[in-house]
Structures are given as C-alpha cells and as structure tokens.
Length: 408
Ligand code: ASP
Ligand code: MG
Image (cartoon, rainbow, N blue to C red):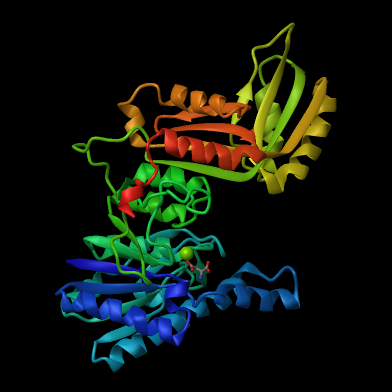
C-alpha cells in the first residue's frame, strides 16, 4: 500500500513525541508499505509565533505572517526526518515549495492550485520517506503562503491525491469521530466508518477534528481518510465513500453547537426584495447567516428569523437596527443564548420519520423548539442553550446510539 501519514501538533509536540511518531512511520515501512509524511508545527508553536508578531503590531502584514508561521512546520519536519535517519531510514524533509504545493496568492488563507509531487512517487517506491511540511505552499511569484489554521489536514489529503496513495492516515490526539461529544454523553461510541457527507455535517457543527476543506477535497477525489490517534494505535474512524451495501441505522450521530445567536425582525412590509435587503448588508459585513425562517405574511407584514455565530451577534444587531428603521419594520428581537442540535446520518434517506421522532423526543423532555431546518441527511433544531445537554443525551439514547453496558 501507499500511505500518506499526517501527524498533528501533539504528535510532534516534543522530542519524545517525535520518537513515538517515528515508531509509527517505521512500523508502516516494516509492513512493506510506502510512506510519505505530512506534519503540523509542534503544538502551540503557530500561536506562539503569531503572538510574537502581535507584540510588535496588532496588524502585521499577512505576507510576513505566512513567512513566519511556515517555519513551525519546517522545524517539526526536519526533526522527524533527523529521528528517522538516525534509525537508518532514508527520510528527508521538504517544505511546501520543495514538495510542489502551488497555491493562489491569498496570504493566510491560500487555496491549493495543484501539487506537483509526481517526483515523490519514485522516491516512495524506493522506500524513501519524504517528510513534508503541512499548511503551506508558494504562490506563482514564489511567496510563501499558508492555508489557514488547521490547514495541514488539507495538505495531507492533497499530497495523498497527488502521489496516488491508497489512504491518508490522519494521526491526532483523539481516536476518531464519536456519535456525539463524549464530554456530554459518556455512552458515546466511536464511529468505525462514516461517509464524507456525514463528516462534513459533523465538522460544520463544531466537531473540529479535521479541517472541513480536507474532507471536501477527499470527497472530490474519493480519497479515504483514516482518522486515528497517535497515542493509542487502535483503529479509528474511516471517512470514505458511502457503502451502499450496508444497512444503516436511522442516524449516525448527534451534534450540537452553542456558538449561535438568533435575531428576529418583526413586521416587515412584505414585498419582493426584503430578504435580499436584510441579508445583503449582513453578507457584506462578512457574517455567515445559518438557519433562516420567514413567516407567512399577515396583513402585508412578515417576520424573518435567522441565526448567526454568537461572536457576530452585536454587529448583526447594529446592522438590523438601521434596517428596522429604513424598512419600517415593527420590531427587532435578539437572543444570544440559543444553540443548535442536529441529528445526522445518511440512513435518513431510507428511514422515514426521523424528524418526527426527534421532535417527539424533545417534546417528551419539555424542550421547546424555536426553529427547524433540514437537509437530506440532517435535521437541525434551534433551542435554548440551557437544554443542549438534555437534548443531546435524550436524542442519543432514543436513536439507539448509546454504548451497550456490556461492551465496555
Ligand atoms: N500549524 C498550523 C496551525 O496550528 C496548521 C496545522 O496545524 O494544521 O493552524
Ligand atoms: Mg489540526
């Protein structure tokens, strides 16, 4: 097999950890596999570097930030290469440019245009081990760019695609994706296999195990990702194409996000263009609107309710206050103590009544649903933040996801 292994910050966080990581690489070679490695910076290093720049100015130029933070990954790549070489393995470090990562010129949030890594295939076949810096590339002028925080997941998937790997193993400090947050539900179970689409839904709901872009990229090229722990070498979660032959449970997991605020603009004169009038200025301010509900209009007036990230609540309320006046709306209400709870799963496509079951479970627990939105594989409700834990626990249990007592 040809494998790209990615190690996150905690897996290269100290010389000791680098040794354990080298053990994992070495074991894979011993199994007869071809390996390329992608590393993050040592844990905390990217933040440390950014704070240095911020001690000089609160507005450092993005180009210089990239030049600076890219060094974090160069250190960990070189250290791992040194450790592997000490063991007689033909490893060598490569930075983003050397590994062929070409990006656009948008500093601090660059996108990969292509990975010219064909030359690495020969080296891997010869059992040499390229150790590549994650998170970075070069633009067409040769400037160093970085891919946004958490970007080395995306680097790893892109490299796996470029060298035609069989799988991209992403080693981190958790051993996989869980049916829900184990901090809330002790009976949460590790999911063995999850589809790309489900993983994207989990990721967008704050389960930040993988950078969302890496999953999108993997989905486009059908590159399987094995998300696993470098601390405990048990099988993790396989993120891959949906297995059509498998019987699916109704749902695969329950996710939640507390980072939500809800805004209602009441009694807007209803005519074409109001939604665009309301959401135009919000979009211009760079604020992501999520759940939107518009009421049926009564005597020519309607209400619009929507959610935004909690950190954008005050800014959005200011924009809305101006609009309320200019659009002659009757009232404006806001609440920044709401949360989103979702049930997710491709099984919903073949099981009817998942939404109804969810509503019933919440009703039985006395949880009031404020807003509802659905997609093909997800049902989301907005509820008062204080009910999140109760809702998540009740749903996890009602949909049969709780770990059986005897299987611990
Ligand atoms: N070192 C970068 C960060 O901390 C990239 C990564 O770790 O994925 O965001
Ligand atoms: Mg990460």
